[in-house]
Image 1 (cartoon, rainbow, N blue to C red):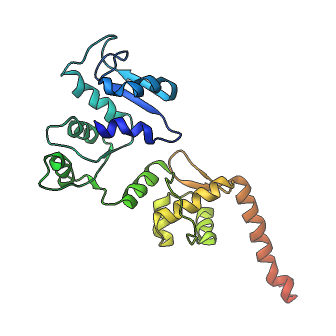
Image 2: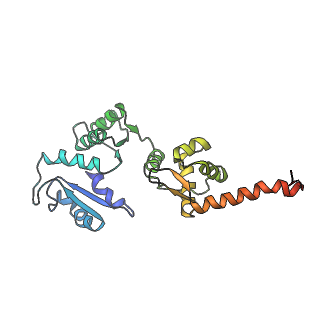
Length: 232
């Protein structure tokens, strides 16, 4: 609950969606009143319960499936075996969502559910870099773009000339880290050189294709002009 209450305060430029286990007009718990009041201006408050419905135990497991369905990925930082967070994770897995889990101490009851999810095949988030890479791959954006990263710009663009490609496939082809490749793609996208397709692949823009064709034609013509053997 503490993480859920704090999360909206750390969102920059995003939206807060509250999925209530009560009626959408009922604030619960009262300690989250400020979040409920701000949510309609930057997101929404949704509920499966009728207007005015007070908290009921049966309503929260129902609500957890809605939480799981709202996003492509679910990140679990801590979960007991009998917790609402664990039931939300199980619902997300049933719905085919990507499930990422931060491991915890084997002696902590609050980590038993999280560790069980990892044992059952959930993706392990062992570091901040792991989290950054997963978010970048799922949503095609970077939380952080590190300055000074080396970029094989010519090879990256050349790879995109042949066909649109996903960032992870580009990273394997270029033998570079996914964060480095996504940083380069973000830079090119801001400059109008590449664009992100609905299926997550990246492609050169039409202008970039035309420019590449012009450069290729000029390059092909250079040997004939330089050697005076254009008639061959």
